[in-house]
Length: 100
Length: 100
DNA sequence: TTCCATGATATCGGAATTCGATATCGTATG
DNA sequence: CATACGATATCGAATTCCGATATCATGGAA
Image 1 (tube, each protein chain N blue to C red):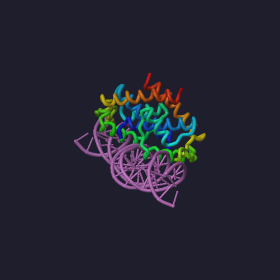
Image 2: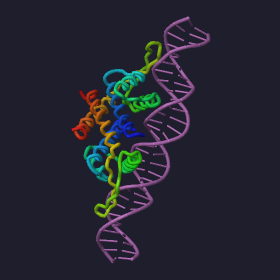
Image 3: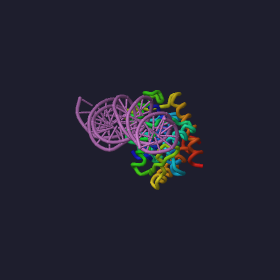
């Protein structure tokens, strides 16, 4: 895989944790949000990622019906928010190292 | 894999590109440098990563003997520096989105 | 009630990655 | 020449990425 893609996939996961800790997000919304930020992620990558994050306890989901469609909404757990904070700390260090 | 690890692996790759574009780096030096920044990467991950980056044209290597040991030194190619610049742009956006 | 269109979510399978553990290899020294 | 040293290379099982496709629940039409 191209290195830029590998790097971006990590950034995408930070976005997921971020949005899921600010409010509820579902798969399609997340894909649109990421697209706005210039990231592409296919369903075949996003959904297994969400499942894995929930299985590991970073996210918690519940289903709801919106516009006649069943949607699974995710929000960050305490463990998820902690992981996000850890990522934020490292982003600050990364910025100092490679941007300034 | 834990999400923090997945995220950090991307950051590690940014570091590799960064250091290889500032000067020459070899495997052991890179491992020490990353350890200073609080990242752990084992040889079984680092070396295949370096090989892959070189195979894809982001890095270019040459071997040298230092203290009686054969070391392979890497530096970023033009393609590698471009990828780094792309990563930097996205890091700036990430900071705006999740840090402020 | 039953069927259908819609679109969100779930799954599939091949290629590639991650990792610790271990092997390999080149050099300098005795 | 033989050996110790340590940097680099490789191994194999588990996991991830991805596009393509399947599945599934819902609301409305007939």
